[in-house]
Structure formats: C-alpha cells, structure tokens
Amino acid sequence: MKKNLVKIGVIIISISSFLPAASIRNQILLIEASENIRLESQQIVKNYLYFYSNPKKIKYRNEALQGIDNLDKQFRIIAKSTKDEDSKDVLAFLDYSKEKMKEVIDTPFEKDNPALMLDYSETLLEGAESISNSIDYIPSIEEKMLMKMKDIAFLVERISKYYIAIFVGQEGINYIEMLDEAIQKMEDDLTSLKKYEYSAKNLSYLVELKKNWVVLKKFYLNYKEIKVPNIVLYASLEVRRNAHTLELYHSKNQ
Image (tube, rainbow, N blue to C red; front, side):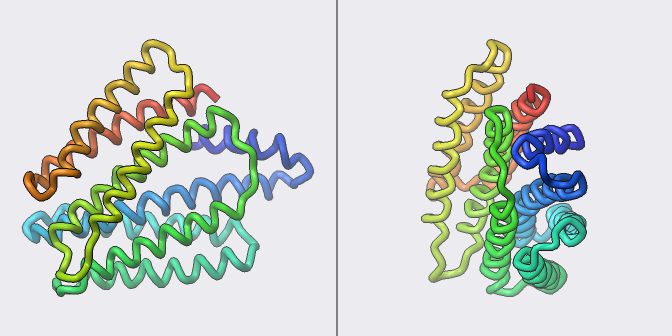
C-alpha cells in the first residue's frame, strides 16, 4: 500500500509541483482513506446482514465490528490530513453515522436494524466520495486501471450487501433495484477493461475474473429460485481475489 501511495504521489506532483511536500502527502493520504471508507461502508453492512440472518455465526458480527475499527483509523487520517472545512463537516457526520452503526451491531435484533444499517452505509459512501472528489489530479492509464480494480472490489461488496438484504429486508422495502443497478455498474467496469492491452499471463487472470463473475452473477440474478447466501459469499471472495491479483499488477506497473 505504501508503494501505491508513492505512485499516486508522482501523479499529483506532475500537476501540482507548486504545492509543498506536506500538502501533496496529505492529498495522497486523503485518497487512500476515502477509498478505504468506500469499501468498508459496504463490507460492514454485508457482514452485519449475514449475522442478522444467522445469529449463530458470530464471526460476521466480529468482522463488522472490525470494520468499525477500520473506519476509526481512516477518520483519524482524514482529520490530520485536511484543513478543508467542508471535508471536516462531512467527517463529523460520518463519525456520527459510524457510531450509530456500532449501536445497531451492539444491540439486540430489531425489525428496523437492516434498513438502518443500509442507510448508514449509504451515508458513509456519499461522504467518502465527497472527500475524494474534492481532490484534483489527472490519473495515468495505470492509475485508472488500479482504481477500476478497487471499484470492482467495492461493487462485489455492494452487490452482496443488497443480495443478502433482499432475504432479511422487511415488507415495503425493495432492494432489487439497487442490486440490479450495482450489477450493471460491474458489467460496465468489466467491459471497460477491454481497452487495456494485457500480456498473455495477465489476460488469463482477467479471463478467470470474468468467468467467476459470470457464475456469481447467476446466483445474484436468480435469488428467487436459488437461495444460497453462503455460496454467494465464498464465490464473491473469489472474484475479489481475482481483482486483487490484477490490482497488484497495475500497482507494480506504474
């Protein structure tokens, strides 16, 4: 990850050479922290919903709480790295949402808990993207591909979140539209990868990623006929591993 930050820093330097080194470093930290919050916003709720659907699997609750701790770390990084008042205001609200999430995780199950967690996750996502969008830089081709792989990991967690939400959601709340929208965004990301000329070896990793995604997507789309949340969980982790392999390639190739 430190190597990633250095490479992102080179991009920022190329267009912002007039900025002091400390300012450039702070921008790099903000980029990384906002991306981590973006992912955790989906992952925490996905884990909580798996726990909600099967209270015997305490490990999902523990993973959700670990995600809360990870958010704390990212919030501290942002607080130290920005002087922008708007970003500080956003951060304060994100911290509030994080605390409300922890309250839900720590209290007995109630009917409204899934909807509350889903709302808080969207607040965290919106805030993370707001902070990220406040940073101006022109990414290289490799940087764009690196961020695309991070986005694929994010979308896998987002789709899985809505998949399990369909099963535990209460009457009157429909998560199908959000599931379909996230699936379409994943399709768009995968289609855009065709523009990059991979070596034969790395092309094989991409083929494996797409093959595993096709299998996973069938489970997502056939949720009415085939209810296999545990299989979906493990299959989604495999797609994330595929994306991570290519993420490492783009990181080293910068």
